[in-house]
Image 1 (cartoon, rainbow, N blue to C red):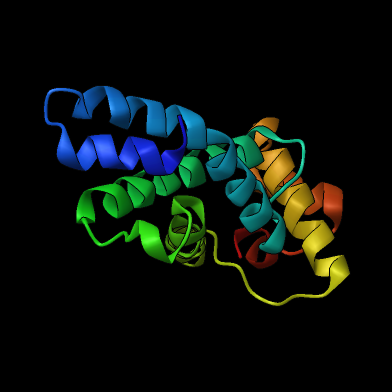
Image 2: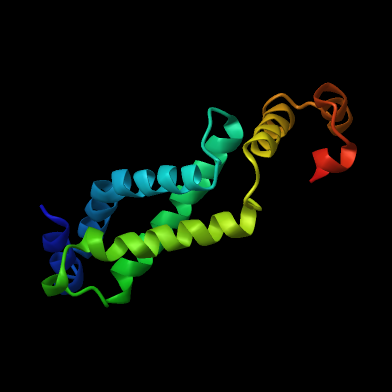
Length: 146
């Protein structure tokens, strides 16, 4: 079934609304994951670390919540376009707001971003102490903390 058919069932058939909702989520999880990956990449948070995986999972959670709000709001009008087209900016916006609030993303040089990734990898993935990170990377404790 298409998203639009499932939305019709969700809004018009209370007996089958829950099944339609579950199917809507299942059908759109790939979209939500794609938006999460693109958002993480836009904020330089996409690499092969556990920290990045945690960020992706948090972004997907935000996306699922935004998708849920779109579905339950009752504002979607099928005659104006596809559900995914309507939901996309809401999902992306929710993810970007989460990243802005939680990742401290700022415009930095490539070299600085390299240090940020290395510090995160050493601290989150390897459990390296801040003092050891400062010593190994030859940067100040203030820079490690930042």
